[in-house]
Length: 310
Image 1 (cartoon, helix red, strand yellow):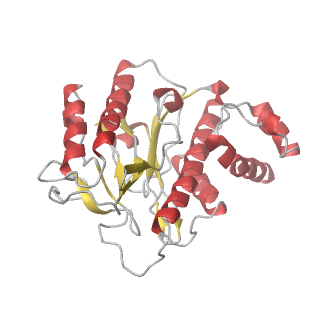
Image 2 (cartoon, rainbow, N blue to C red):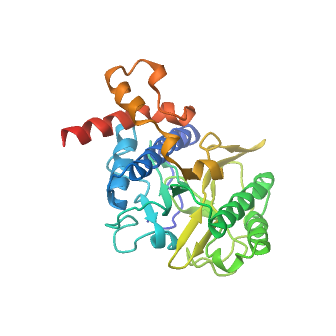
């Protein structure tokens, strides 16, 4: 991944609007990821790398910079998901075949006019009734929600981390939250401020940060729980700090437990097949239909047609 460096000055001046667009492209990437993980349920054999390549292709086809990625897309399934950056020998997405029952962490970002996004979702291929997985997911989800009210100018950067970390500790997973809550981003995917309440952060190797949040900051909030050699959970969303508090850039991209659990009836293969013959007929949209699905529909069709040609 990119290092921790401040944004250079004098680059594209339309920072906020470019970041909003890069977040839109990241949402497309996440829906493409979810769709291809659903394909695993239908019997397809797909590796982490193949899914990552499809994600990258979709974001580029929709406008992400093809020559300067935000960072290497991470598709980390099963035990690889217990490593925050995925398979360390294969840039976060390797030859492991994704299997039914895997918990899969997908961390991706796009770049528009120099400015990046950084969005993570965790999926469970086939769903689960395992209480440890469910409790871990909900601990991360609820910890993230608790931080939202303090994401405003003037809040010391350590405060959101302290809130999230306290909740995860109360749920019994404190020693499994092994990195800071989040970070700034802009031209580089990792920039100040560092949302950390600890003096030594194991993910970035930086000391905790008491810098107050500023109205120009773009921030990620990404609590995580990592069960060594089993699975990991991370949910990461993007925010712009402004004079009204914050703008929740990824609010339209689902992150609840139902969305995380991928089941066979989430998409209807026949509807996708019919759609290829009449792309203007909205009645053939795959189920479920929502904001993100409409955005990504064209990317899914392209992927299906390319598979047929191959």
